[in-house]
Structure formats: structure tokens, C-alpha cells
Image (cartoon, rainbow, N blue to C red; front, top):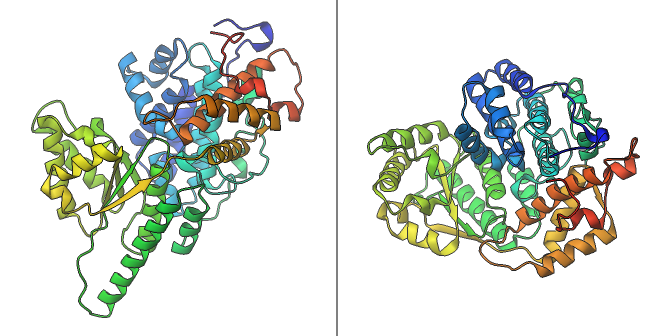
Length: 462
């Protein structure tokens, strides 16, 4: 892709390698594993930059000793973090660590540095902006809880951009307020949230009324069960494991993250963070190795919620069967300090649970996530934009409603992800629209117009 002189990319304040090094520094100061932190940052960067031509080679060079396939594998793992806190950040939040905000800021720097991988695209700019906002919001560097998939919900304070985010006019147009200055991070330890606070966050989520009622019911059952045990009364064994069914982008991961915090606040889990995995992270290349790999994942998830998305992908072959058998055994061995949530489309999930007696006896509660209405998707888009410091004009919102009306609904419709993807693309189009404006005003940098939500790519760089 070629740029006019006014949009010619310059070197950012931090290269990706430098940004990853800064992330590792924060991780080590927090007593975390440096290798894990660097891999997490590298995956986030790959997910942000995956649409840029030449990004794979640039990423591999920055990471060191990596291949093009490593880039695409990392991008697949990191996509979940474009709109939600990373696994390590989630753990810091759950612990109330004083390193939470510095770690989130370092992740935002990584997202910024990813904009310089390969030949920058408008979509990469949007990815980076939303990813940075998601990490900062989760850490409390921006106000407000989260929408499905980690989208910020309430009005955020205006923040000054770091040099890395404003290194080029394109990135400056991406967001004038994407990250907070490193020195502004609060030093005090955050107080872990109470059950009531976490339930209030659940209730504030857009839509999901049936889900909210069921989570409240589960909390009431577990609370009374704990009180009966303390009173030395007989108490039936109640499984805490859950099945979440619904189409993509309906908030399953967000609710799972809140459940993990609620269970910790109730004293049912020791760590209370969310560990997200899929088939690739449980299944190995050879029979016999899968059991070891799955057991290792479950061991690391002890004290937390293990969230397995599209769990039915573990059916149909000997490798998946081995993973499921190992999972059932590990769930029993660690039943006092582990909760497993399996998620996916409704009918395949029913088949998956029914196919294994060990699963059907442990997953007795199924929570259904409904699709969002058009009004709810508009609200999600509006609050996503606000959380990333953008403002949609009334005409832009009308344009989005028109796009919704013209979009078929089915199992492949993204729900909340549709709103997020539209915002990411709109941020990129806005940057391209402002490419020849030497000194955009704050209003211009924040405002998204109808043409920014036009899915006609004509006139944009390729």
C-alpha cells in the first residue's frame, strides 16, 4: 500500500521489540513469568497487525526466531485480546495488583507498535485503537466496566496519547487519547471487587436478561449451600460447572469473566481469573501427548475458571476424546478449586455434553445467550466508540442502522463483534479521510461520520 507524503509511516517511539521488552520489565517487577508475558504481547501484536501486508515477516524479525506460521498461530490466539484483557492482565486485575495499570499501559504500547509492522492498513489502526482501549479499561485506567467481548461501557476520561500512538499522522488520527502516560499509573493496590459489585457489573451489561437471572440464581444457590455447610447441615453436592450456549459475540466470554470474579469473591476459587482455551491448546500432535497437554492446562487453571470455547471441536477423533477424558478426570481431582465453562452453538453443545457420561454428570446447568436486537447493537457500538474516545454523529448511527437492516442474521452473524468490527473499520476509514489534514482538530479526531461506516471500500488504500 502506498501513502501520500503526509501519511508516510515513521518509526514509532517504541518498536515492537522494545515494546515487548517494556512489557517484560513490568511483568518481572510483578513477579510474573517473562516468557509468558512476552508471548502474550507478541500474540496481541500479531492479532492487531494480521491484515497488513508483510506484517508476518516484520513480526517474526521483532520476536526473534519465529516463522510466518508462528505469526498466524499467534494471531489466532491473540484475537480474543483485541477486545478483552489478556490472560495475564486478567490475573493482575483479579489479584488487585498495583502492577495492573502499568501492565495494561505496556500492552497498549505493544498494540501501538504493531501498527508499524509491514505496510500499515486502516484496519490495523482500528484494531490497535480498540485493543488499547480494552486493556486500559479492564485495568481501570479508563472508567467503567465492560461490554461483551471486553468493549468499554461508560464514558471514559480524556487521556493524552503516548508518542507511540501519535508517531504517524495515521496513528494520530486513529485516536488522540488511546493510552495514558506511564507516569500517571496509580501506585496503590486495587481493592478486589465484592460479589455485589460484580453482580452490578453483570446487571449493567446490555441485554442478556435471561443470562442475568440465571447467574443471580446460581449465586443464591451457592451462597445458601455454603451457609448450610458452615451450619453443619446436610448439603447436596452442587456442580459449579456451566454450559454457555449462543451465537458468536453474545457476551459469553464477558459473563464467564464476571463469573470467575464472583466465585472468587464468594471464596469458592482461590485465584478467580479466566483462562480461555480452545482445541489447539488442549490437543497435541500425537496420542498420549494430548493427555499431558490437557492436564497441564487444567493445572495452570486451578483456582480459576477454565473457559473452553467451541468445546464440541473436541469430538470426532481420538485426540479430542483423549482431551475430554483427561478433562473429566482433572475436573474431579480439582473439584474444590476449579470451575469449567464450556461454550458454543446450542445444538452442537447439547450433542457434545450428551456424548460423554462424565460430562453430562458435571455440566447440569445450561445458560442460553440470546442474539442482540438492533437497538442493543447500536448501543454497543456507541459505547464501544465512547470507550475508545470516538463520537458517532446521528447520521453515522443512522448509517449503522441501515447496515444492520441489510445484514442477514444467522449462526455466522457476529452480534457484538459485528459492532466492534464496524468500529475498527470506521476508525481506519476516518484516519484515511483525515490523511491530508495537517492539524486535525480534537473534534475531527473524535468524530466518526456516515462515510466512515460505509462498507464500500472504494477510494481506500489496498
